[in-house]
Image 1 (tube, rainbow, N blue to C red):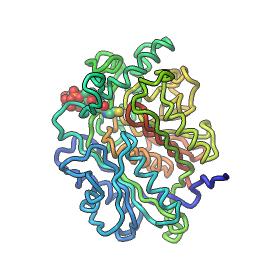
Image 2: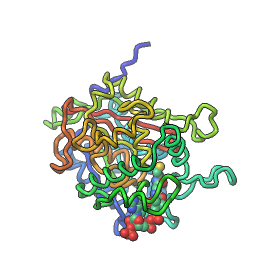
Image 3: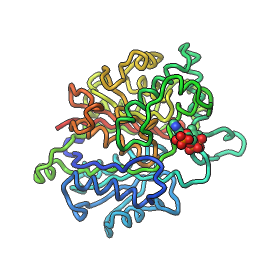
Length: 389
Ligand code: COA
């Protein structure tokens, strides 16, 4: 059966993002409000115009994120449909995807997707562990889980830690120019290689940090955007793929990349009717330095086993052939889980509109940007392709 498969009538009319970092002085609701106020102003509408909303939070807590009412109380929109969603670290883009599809379905004209996470107030170092088995889950932290395929990849393709270190150096350099990023500092390859080890091959600077923050988008029907006389960003394609949460037990898991990313990217490229070479730049899920390298390959920017050459040859730098993470990425901008996917959309929209800091602006050839959000042990991936008006 022929599928419509395109989102021609749906556009983004506003984006917002809070400052990311250690925000001990702000509550869960304060962070949501910070992002929302910027977004509302950008969209040029009033809060009453929003007909429905999706809230993305991965770790609900006493501060908020248990249900839709956490967003209602924060932004003072009551009596409307608000849905809380969660899909591992892809939670933010999942909230966006659901909001987009509600407009595509013709049910609403203007909706909000907002992601927010307050992680720094928790007791443990790193993220709390999700213990699904008392013995087999030992060492099952995010750095430990991603370290396994990273080691396999390094062995198979004969590389050392240097390409990984280059990813960290690039992303810190980009993030240092970004006023909202968690870390505002550049680092050297030597800093990365000599930092304390977290889970080999990942040292401190190979890991994204634990961050507080919020980001959001306002999505509308194209006709409504035109009536409002708003310049907008087009949604060309979205793909979501979910695989097993225990890929290590799958006999065919190769430990060199993530099938979920490949499958989500295929869906998004097919919906957009484009190929990876048509993409001008990308915001990808660099939870660990090696993950960014595997993403280059899984998103089709390089052949399997060749992604590390992109970073070594400077192709993913801001001035390179395919700039990746001009925002600073998760590594430097930070990773408040439920917010990250929407933070990527925020960056792609601002790059496409040419309104980021001059030294971070990428060169636009086709006016197409891609955002990629990965969750769990590579089990959930969401890819969104956006286009300039
Ligand atoms: N990158 C760079 N610097 C970092 C950092 C990171 N990822 N994490 C912490 N720092 C810095 C802090 O700013 C601080 O610097 P300062 O002493 O100059 O103030 C110092 O390192 C110590 O910070 P602290 O918060 O005590 O770090 P920690 O040891 O508790 O945590 C990690 C470090 C790597 C364990 C933690 O950042 C982590 O778990 N990251 C991964 C998060 C994750 O798994 N996300 C999901 C991905 S799928």
